[in-house]
Length: 87
Image (cartoon, helix red, strand yellow):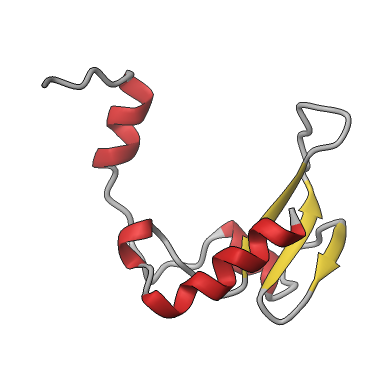
């Protein structure tokens, strides 16, 4: 069975990135960049999107960097559950 992907999905799957380089999300978590934080605990942070596409538009991110699902561990289930709960 052949799966058709959009060019955007294809690009995302084939992107090469440096897992050691600090991301914008790392900078928000470390408070190096300002954000309108609406929730924070030891596992995740929620903040309003800087370019909202809906009347209510916020992001919930883990404080532990998990670049891809392939990088996740069994112990990250608790973090993922917390993100869903906060959302």
